Amino acid sequence: MNRLLRLRRESIGFAIGSALFGLGACPGYLTLVGEDWTNATFFVGSVFFTLAAFIQLRLSGRWRGGAWKSKEDWDDWWSAAIQFIGTLFFNLSTFSALAESIGATAGRVWLPDAYGSVMFLVSGVLAVSATRHAGHLWDPDVRSWWSTWLNLAGAVAFGVSAAAAYVIPLTGEPISIEWRNLGTFIGALCFLVAALLVKPPRQSRNSSQRG
Image (cartoon, rainbow, N blue to C red; front, top):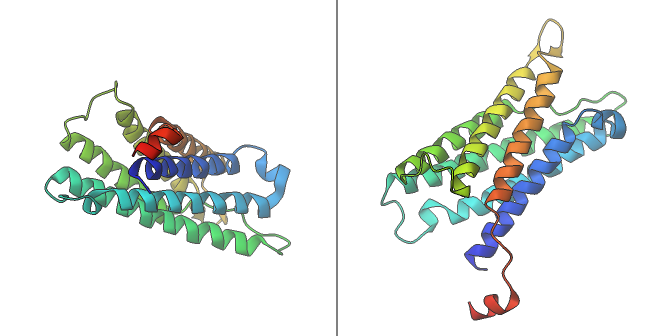
């Protein structure tokens, strides 16, 4: 499998995962489909995140010949590795919420995962650092520049969502349901646009045969 095809699958995976998280956080979606399907939406979205993050990890840093020769390579690989670990936390938290809600008369809807959100935030900062080392910290004419900063913005939004989802012990309720959903939706939207911006074009059959 060539690198271009892997990059395309990575972008599509992140786009699908982002779209599902955005859908799950949409106002009225929970009322329309119920807790089970809402949790299932988040869980399937997290699986696509993990698959895409694994592809990104395979394509980054140490997997390239001659890697580890620059700070950019180090930051690039660590960004991908930490993001992949973050997606695993989302896998666990979304699956846990889904498992609890199935068959229960009063289950719970998935709450944004604090550990995964922190991992995403650290990953986003490292990705920006890798861009800085490459000399493109400010280059709005390049799509990858927009994608990097949108991913960081999405990570910040997920962090806000996780903070708003903190359950107050005295009341048993999240700090803010509105900000929990809004943060998840905005973060997912940022990730979706970022993934689509860097999605490589489909190769024609003739060009793939020549390669």
